[in-house]
Image (tube, rainbow over all chains, first blue to last red):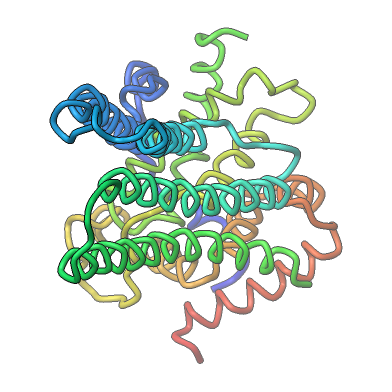
Length: 182
Length: 159
């Protein structure tokens, strides 16, 4: 195939034409598939955590625990909810500077700091939860094993989550390198 | 500028979004999601469009940036078969063998090369491509030659 032929084939690849009404619908945030999914998850978590915060004081002996344990629990939950909303903002944010390469570099840097924040938020969450629920408990070996199991499950979850972020950042960095390669 | 003006410009240039979606997506579901994501990003960024460049050049930049940085769930299909399943972006019946083969060949390239070759095939000048991507014109020239060779090789079944 020759150069010109490639260009002429490229130009004739059909594209489904969308009406102005269809395009207008796409401008609405509530019709955005990814934003909607993140928003839904953030609101479900916010709702569940709010219910939990209203109930824990009586249901999980919050009243009997020291102030520090209560504060650590509320803080752990709040940081986690806030982090979800930050993830939503990251997706929602318009990201464009002067050119594709610059945009990708900025986005990779934002993802990197979001990855770090995710690890910190999740660690604070599990630490706050453990601190609250183990406070005032007399530890038997069975309870130590249970705590150990929870921590191991959490570390595995954190590792898998971190790997997803790392793969995404690596993919963008690879593309940046491909662009920069002479 | 108003939503109405944006929609007019978008409607006239929507082929750019379709082309970018074509080269970065293998499945209709991904295609639709990316089309919407690009449209949404362009709308969000429209206030920053100062009109110094053509709207089409600006839209190309947004579209490529969004396509490369967005997270697509599904892995690309690597095997080329004569009868393609319905859920792919296009079937052979819809667009014909040659077009399908060109799209298939472009999808074998890495994401950076796909961006450069799509701009080249759309007959943008080297200066315009360099401005959109953010590398020098000389580099663009070298890249285009290399990508074309790769593309011809794929189209000739690696011969």
